[in-house]
Length: 321
Ligand code: FRU
Image (tube, rainbow, N blue to C red; front, side, top):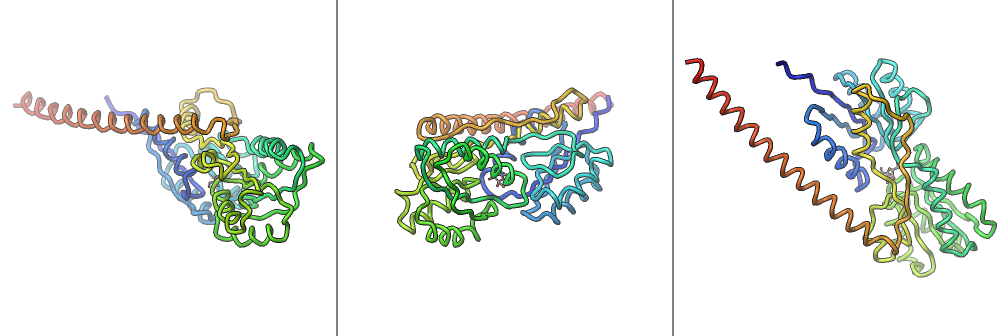
């Protein structure tokens, strides 16, 4: 019998920097190892929306059955994603959004809930009184907008809490450090810093340390991956933001197989702090071991298949003579 044509999924990833993006890919690979009929082609836009738009078009030209895209910035990446959608290729948005409704489904964390949960956690840490500094991600990323909105909205319920300064961190650390230093020096009243991801929280910790403020200023991050920092108390908390790699592949397959699926798939967040960080670390370890086991079995299976294929060849050879 003729083998079915494999599904080709194109993945336009805004960046491959950092452990969160790595976790996305690891999750995808874990799920894909159960689906050898699926081919995944990923292109890395390296935090550049123009490059990302070109890469989406390149994936389309190469021929794909479905596009997974995590847009760097919402507005500039929207037209290329719309092109894909209008050409009939289903589009699955992963973690970040575009500005239009021309997509098939969304899967990823709930950024507003992340911001809201951070605000409530900050309020309890500060006993509802204090001054806050917010470090935002890239301003045009939808995740930044969501986290910011949720944070401000929930904070408004606490009249004793004030955001006195804001730093744009662009998700990474290069420009963020000097800006944060200046802001903290101008605002010695700050008692808590909320960073939109753990990457920036990590550098914020270094700045606090340099300024001798580590004891005075509490720090909260997002992603739930800098568990070492939470364990050491450098971060008071990190909010889980599920990388959703497995979920994305499962969703993609549902779409491709014409099964029913919810259009909006927002994954919940949870506070990771000193009370549950050890459990989270154990879980992480377990997943990593399972992943290694899966890879090992995969290797064994391939060896077996190769042996079987060559035995078949010999057999057919014998039969032919
Ligand atoms: C990685 C990242 C994560 C963050 C997500 C938001 O590129 O910045 O740290 O949670 O993207 O989209």
